[in-house]
Image (cartoon, rainbow, N blue to C red; front, side):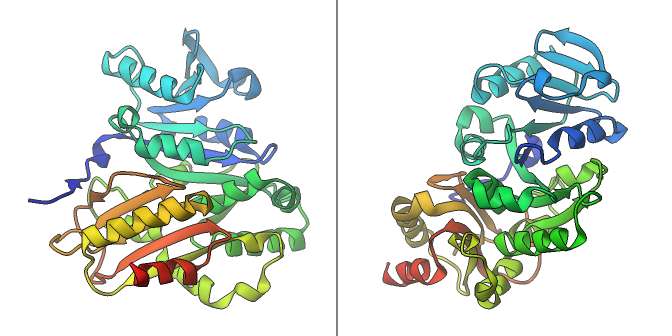
Length: 342
């Protein structure tokens, strides 16, 4: 009998978090993807309709905070706090009081630190009963992005924790500046996939399916989500080319060759969270735990972690445990040493 639950995430509603600094193109992006028929049966949560110019897409108002768009998407404003809104919507969906939807797009304000939202989605039982964090998408403006990364911690964190980075306004930006920004983002977050978006033109599929959970249990998603090799190579080769400002945030991957004793590993990880939780922006891991034939996925932000879950199968023959850290002012050697001391 396993200590862990086999993941039921495929049955829960995937939530894609769309972050990005002020003016980085989130509204343009939303307008484009919401007009796409493939986005039918999506719920879009935004802070308030007035802030987002979606008016021309509205078809009918269902009630005060919810409208149905022509493409079949449902748009809803966040009433009060996000926690309450998500629970309210889950209840209404259960009672068939909303048009049907299969996924949620959550757009944050441009100034938001993504961590509290990720923590809510990862470890609030009332929320994780109905929803799962599928992935984090950050839009970065090719014209102003570098300056925003320099001046605003939030912009830096949004880019650092993203699974996918969308660079907007490349058609308007200087080609050299765009290339520098790409290189800088690649250093800041080597595990994220980078895409250029002109006028919001994007395959809506890029906003989803960036998490490790796959109803078909195919497993290649897990590798893409973890992207351990990118963090690993980056940690080895690229320390010299970072600007002083960016050097505070880095990523590294710890690899364990032998199956892990869960009690020891869990005790160590609890210690890591207790001591360095403020510095840990995001942790992703696929683990080989002694006594389990399936891989265990762990995922956390600061000190908040999703309860560990088993995936249906290993992505390939590599059975090493890999743990990726995206952290501020915390290096691999320090964390690795704590494992050997434990």
